[in-house]
Image 1: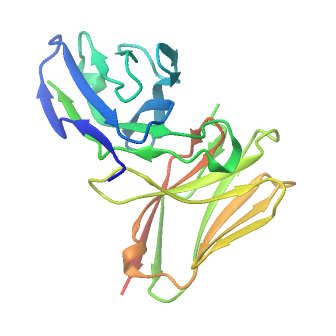
Image 2: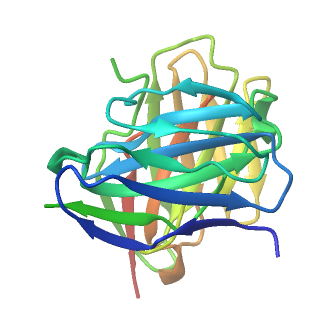
Length: 116
Length: 107
């Protein structure tokens, strides 16, 4: 089954304790990205990657890191989490980013992160 | 400055009636748009898209209309069903998302 898999689904942590949210897709998509969803703010892009070893900042990259060492994986790293990073996070992938109306994204099920 | 705006945070309609979800954009260079639907505890899923060379795209009960002069698009759902209750996001290229509209369809 074609899918984007995120882990964990729920995570509670404390300020300053490094964490990683994993993301993997099995569709051989070149494009992957991370979003956070906050009430009233929609989906805001954190980082994206057009291909292996290529990553770029999105709209809200502060406090986050990513890596794209393999095509299928795109982990999101919070080196020193803070309470304002409490949010719902989504990973997504696409085979046709930038190619018009076909650039639909496939999303993971989300990771609810709480930083105390 | 937000480039895609969904000015109605919520919409409630009766089952069988039409649902109309609206989206405004500021960048006249945008040449396509997409709509996504999101159920609770799930990620968004692609619903329908439209190219700027068209003013309408239809897929079953879902139709998207594009008015380029007004920089406005709308998603029509006819007839609305309780299973359509979800958050709907409008998206422009790259993509840039609106804040979403929560649709509730009452039986």
